[in-house]
Image (tube, rainbow, N blue to C red; front, top):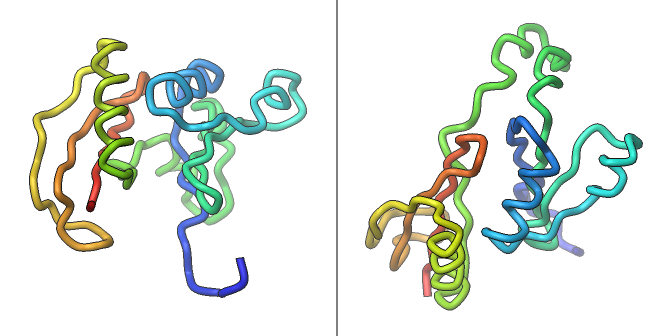
Length: 142
């Protein structure tokens, strides 16, 4: 990357079992796990999954929440999931994701049309929950 525009680097999701969460995001969502072997070996605190070359989702164990003291009062808010994370996909990847989730018996919402996002109105979108209750939205613009 050569330009210095602001980008989303990572989102931290609180999970009960980081290995199981990584498996879900790999098998059902299609995201590549990173640092999973290091996590299981005990050399890093949590694994992640890669959204794209610039963005990852960190899968932080819930027992880390009490140690979240990077700012005064941060521990009081740690452990609460965000409202949702949105993944923007191509139309083909969107359809493939919906199919994998249904195949894995993961409940999905009805389709929404023209919901507004970072790139304007999306053609279609839907929501699902990961095994830890985090809500993920999938959408496509093309």
